[in-house]
Amino acid sequence: MSKKDQETIDVDSVRAILGWTGGGIHKRIDENRELVELLQHDGFLDRYPWAIEWLRCHDEFLSALLAAVPIKKGLFMGATRGGAPFPRPWPQEIDGAPHRQ
Image (cartoon, rainbow, N blue to C red; front, side, top):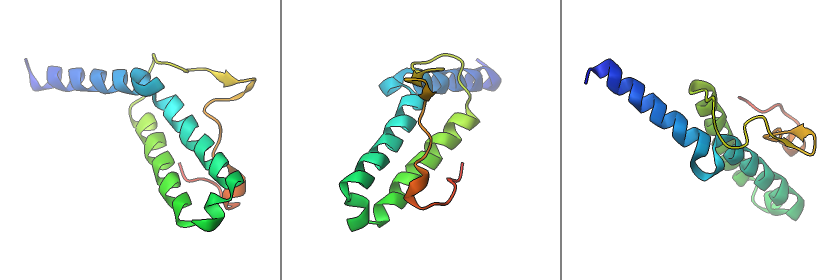
């Protein structure tokens, strides 16, 4: 097998992981953002403000990974949450600043 063939197989494997494992990357992004919303309303982020940067870094990594390795098949692709976008947007009320993607 040539190096080019091996690289193609590796990208296909990564796409399969991003599309299906643990609900897929769209679900992982959405749940990370849902966790931010939950912790914000619980007051956790007021008590531990450093945690938002940790969660923001997770979101930025997952979003960059999805952009770098686009997928065509997977769970939750094209899904909505009662007509709202999926994955949900990064909560703007966290710091008022736009999220870096």
